[in-house]
Length: 343
Image 1 (cartoon, rainbow, N blue to C red):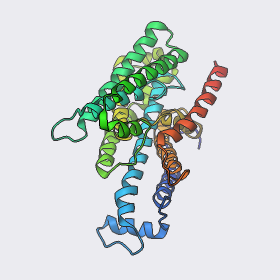
Image 2: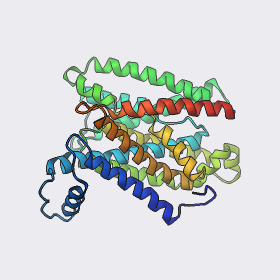
Image 3: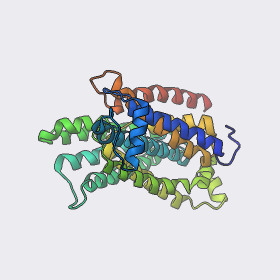
Image 4: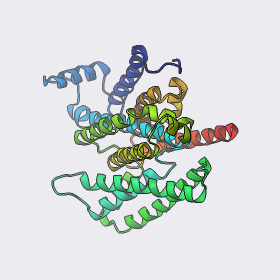
């Protein structure tokens, strides 16, 4: 795939789509109860048209457990990866991500407060947790960037990452304090903070789809501006970009999308750090190609991570956040080392 192209060709989209379909089917068929591929495909086709399911297919496992979970995992991976790619372009920081900048920790803190104290909005079952997660994500991002700018006017990578790590530790301490007052909800909240989409349903999938469609559409409309930011803010101003408006728009959009993902799946770290770099190797630095590629690769990466979490120690199920953190920690060191050499 040539990085000089402006947009993806039909063939490139087809290859990414095939990789995603393969990962989806693999996750649907493999598990504690294996489902034959042919039966799974037949059941999905008949279920799509409301026809009776074939014999040999466990309807409850396929349609009530695995299908909602797999859809939520794919959408969360695409959303988190898209956010990471947009933040890296906006901040000109190869280590920028919701987890490394502390945004995910802030969103988790807001969601934990909502879960522990029963914050809810009447008539909207998930609005309380999501609203708190989004508000805390945006407030955390503003606080971290403000502190980084106050301490280091050059806005260097190391300052932002260091403050993000410190804030994540502070948010983690506050979460532990809140959890100590959670009473009977401690176990479920603790597992949720490690990152898990085990209890996902189709309502969650619909919410994630709407959030990704709306927020993703906003970010994809700003690819030209992100390309200008990648060269520098002065260059962006010179080509007519409203720097303050674009920054605020992208940061708010990213915070909303991360808040929705965290409120449903908990803290799933490093997806937005690892997959944009993989996408950059395949699609190049042009954000018109990079953002769509990041969404596809983020979905595939998180699907495979969730599959590993379900099957590696079966019948014990790991949290998906454990798997992504193990992979992401290694990738973080490699990227940091390459960044230092480049500097």
